[in-house]
Amino acid sequence: MSKLFVDEIQPKTTGGVITFQPNRPMFQVGLSSDQSIPNGTTTQVNWNDIQESSGGFNIGGHFDLSNHRFKPTVSGYYFFTVQLRVEFATPDYLSLLIKKNGSTIRFNVGTESNAANAYVTSHTTTMVHMNGSSDFITVDCSQNSGSAKDLMSIYGQTQFGGFLI
Image (cartoon, rainbow, N blue to C red):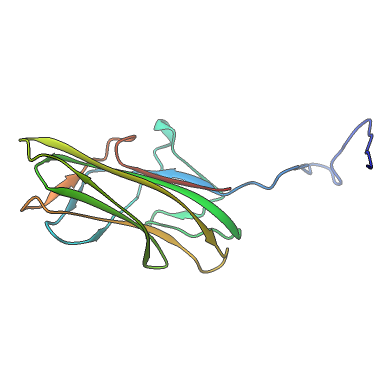
């Protein structure tokens, strides 16, 4: 087995930085305000707030807040987690879909018992390979309360995150 012994490691150039691991793409985003979700209509979640004051981040800048998607430039396997919460709703379900390039790769449904003014939460996680060039991830949801309901913008109740494994 080979061993490497050194007394000191210095940057190659003045002001250079030595990095032992690549800066791994990762993000955690939320909503800047509640988002209305129509009854019975699958709707893309408009993730538009990094919410740094609440612990959000966008390392590498791969999450695009203008089109609400994560599109990394580093190929590899990624872990994603999503949680959605609808406020003051009485739906039978709140579904969420993680989509890769527009196709569903993970689906989950949160349900409740039709109690008045219930909060309904749906959450899921998945791992998926991203090619580092054209692949992107979005999140959609739907609910069936009979009328439009709002996804809560309170950070920690509606949020989306992911990172390179």
